[in-house]
Length: 447
Image (tube, rainbow, N blue to C red; front, side, top):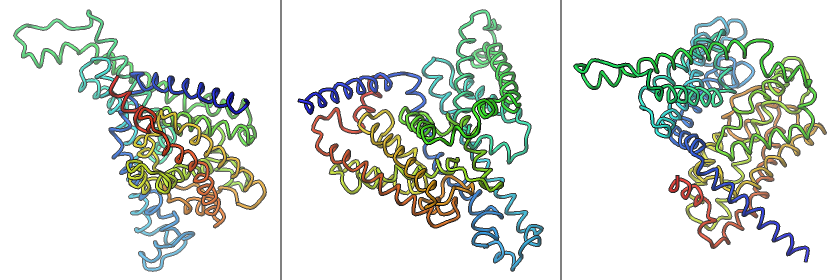
């Protein structure tokens, strides 16, 4: 009796989730965001690798070139060490090249903002090219308003890139679309004017007002965000640094991040204010002040190994050839913690079949990591490194100890155990509408 009641309850919950998923799939704005991600997916992979090359491989103070790492810089410079290495032309050139390649992060945000504007222009029925040029101008206004140097600008966009791109692309397209519908803002031009020129000049006032609004908003945003009253500063002062180190809070934070990704939104960027308030300072305190915070930004970055566990489970246990091909195709990216191709190609995004294991795996990993570090088995995550470090190497480098890599292997094994029963159940599904990818195609066809 209890078993039958539980089965009925489970089916009711699944039907409600299925209904909610279909509604979200058909929501026009969320669909535009997902399509923008899919459009720019090659750029995500390429520019992430460019960032990895600049910040990890070519950084003269990093693990490859630096003295505390493989010390390849000494080999290239004929044996220079210490201050002599830091004063050398080799060091300066590598530092310049590393800084140059780090521009890939702001560039990635710019591309996403343009891709989103392209989709929103179609959705809101406005001219595509002027809307995209407005967005590009707005993004440059935002960059120009930032008061710091190039390195601090890159760090600023590292956590907030997607959020800022979403904000710029949406606000600019929305303002422009509203102003275009105000009839008295459309200029009356001489009939003798060439038609293409007339169409362009008739939107002079809407474009001018859109750019002016973007300029003012960018200035106000940067001014507010760089002040002591910014949201991360307020959160840290109001709640205190210790709150975020509570396991329950860390688990809730990770669950929200994963749920946002499941919705097709960048959970890393949309939770960046909480990360900057608590987990970035914790990381810096571990590295430079000798503190021993467990939950840091590198701890949560290392959890990205979770999706590699799903890919391995599919590759081993799935009887569906299409899923196995997707897993094989995505594994190189997943190994480098570039998860977006797998999230959108499988898809995990807005797929009710993957929601429970996707959340469960990350939460189990978070708690196991907490237990391993708090008991002293694994060192704290002490050193900041690029998020695209290969799995296992990432844990080793960021903790400075082989046990960090072992922890990622344990996480990976747990993820395979968690995901495998779900993959096996997927093999038994006979209804075509429940097959992974069906809902996404259905949503695209009905939108």
